[in-house]
Image 1 (tube, rainbow, N blue to C red):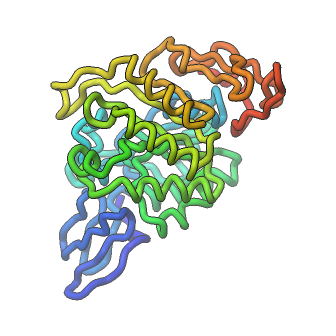
Image 2 (tube, rainbow, N blue to C red):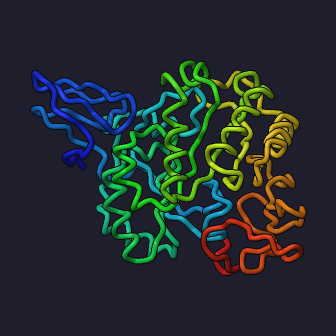
Amino acid sequence: MKKRAKFWEKLSGSRVRCALCPRRCVISQGKTGFCGGRKNESGILYTLVYGSVISTGVDPIEKKPFYHFWPGSSAFSVAVPGCTFRCLHCQNWSISQVGAEEVSYEDIPPEKLIELVHQYNCRGMSFTYSEPTLATEYAIDVGKLAHREGLYNTYVTNGYITLEALEELGPYLDAANVDVKAFDDEFYRKICGVPSVRPVLETCEWMVDHGIHLEVTYLVIPRENDSSREIREFSQWVVDKLGPEVPIHFSRFYPQYKMIDRDPTPVSTLERAMSIAKGEGVQYVYIGNVPGHEADNTYCPKCGELLVERYGFNIIKWRLKDHRCPKCYTKIKIVGDYTPETTK
């Protein structure tokens, strides 16, 4: 549905400048911004995707992936159309690479979304599948209601959002998994269609500084962002700027969208990335999209004890006691409690 946007400024000649993402599109009368979700009507910027839900689902929180946030819980997943990127390898391109005026969707007001979360026995919700930044006004209102009812509110995002938008969203966002797609500006220009990775890194740093639970996903693409140098620099940044306890998920690439001519990432490449990250001091490193790999499990960063065993998105064995290693009693940074009954 259409609603007056929060993040913008008036310019001369009925033009406006959007301030939701770092593109800061200058939008003329009657036009939409790059994302297709913001439109200038008579010199006023409107969001076209407030509650405009194009996809929903009930997912285990581990699918996002979150391994250190309310483990075993279910998240009611919501997507609105559009994205601030044009990634050549997007797996959800059919809903992310379209404008709000090009597709059909269901209007779900915040109150109705909260009802659906309860109806499906979820612990909270996740804005995911497409880019949640477009839904920020909606997510703020949803987050306010969610917090009143003890529900969590999460983003799975490319992290390309302005700090002024984060300031308003932050109090109502409990966790985010941010895709750091590479540690190189050229990759972002060539593959994602944006000038630089820097705003994404600033988003991650801001979230850590403001107490939002953060996990980072790095999709490893052969010959594009898989060099040992780049993985090492990325890992050093995680330790130095985010902290060694922030989990990293090195995810396996499969051919998608406009990169179907590529090969899937060799598992050995992911294992090399994991080894580099651990060598730089990252305490929790996971390998994604390789079901059954031992790097899907959580181990104690101090003594190496197996703490949480997973297969796919399911928790098979939970050995933590009061969030501590049962062998050496090291405190493990995990938000929320786990009970077997919540495992999906």
